[in-house]
Image (cartoon, rainbow, N blue to C red; front, side, top):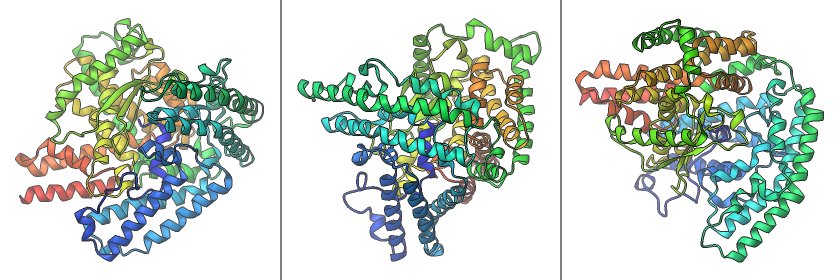
Length: 596
């Protein structure tokens, strides 16, 4: 899973390379473009620059430092201006003659068209009125520092500027939430009850213990001692005089005014125009026309298939009892758990090192960008998922990072760690993002683009590549892979169940518990994630099924000419695209291979 704050990248109408990443001279392909294509690429460039100006956080995430001293303007006026700019951009794009473009540029055009249409359609649902969730929001704004360089005095000055501007961001967020209450567009109360503790984590007696102060607790050698002392002193002052009062006011507002007015229901269908909204989300996240009923059916079918595979593993290990009893055994036997967070972290690092040398069995192309393993920050660990991935910087100045949850190691089973690492790190999200960043001669919005069905579908498909790499020699690790596959199949059932079929939260938790061995802590967090982020969880299994279908098609049609390494490379060489575009790309590759 990608850290939620990064999803803004996929929703922005982002286009070609910014000056921070542009080549010093045009690429040879650019020098030979005709007038129509040159105009299209100028449009891509203008839209990319707009996206960075409008979202300084996005600029920071991709490694562009120009806007590191500010936050996005979240005023209602600024939001209206951004939405108008998206509508204008869609009009401009549609004025281009698509048929005059090369096949490669038609793909860029189609991806941009899908993005802009999606962005314009979602405007009517006013999602910005729900700016805070149990998994992120202004209460966790210090997480921005995780992706910042902190190599020069200016880097620290920029962070100080963001810290000074935080009260404005908090106030703008408060205005949006008040407007959400008026419009009856609020998150479920069962989720919002988790947020006060997150706000309180920002309220410290000693400014040096504030999460915002963390960058000032260490400095690179190049920064003189006098500057270190000055910067640290200024940070403490800003925390004490601006940040703490802002969060105290926000906590008061949240507990006294907002929380009592959040909705007591959980379904997206209960939001304004909620049924249409959920249908839109299902189409948006899966990049298909599948409706909730069909997705629900696919989920039930997959649950039945995977249960049969689990029964085989249960028999293989000689467990005497029902599948439900086997699940309970996997959740509770102490031998499946590490005793301390430190032991758990070392084990995650060891698994990553075990995977790395096996990658050449399933890929010809290994991305250049490295990745690392980090703990999920303590202040959000209790309320977030088992792990997530944070992409690196486009210019290579920041590696990708696989974040793992060390909270309560007694609920983090060993048998899930291999599949989880294959998904979140390599060859899952890290390969998908790193390879995308390295695509040659493509607009920047294509290099950092993110379609959930492609990205999460690839990561779920990557879990199964563990078999091709010989990494599931332990039957319990295979059970972990099946548990993770089941997890995503269950999502299809419970997400559609809660948001379109009237399922209760408890009913969804019980269905999950009955069909997967994940621990109750994880299951509750997962169900709450689906409640707070409707539709997103549908993309994983739908994307995986499509990539697996394309692999089977390629193997069947190419026979002896089929090379798994070439197929996997081709899927990644496409970049993040809607599933229909991926299918066309792979079909064309099959035709070329067959002809050769």
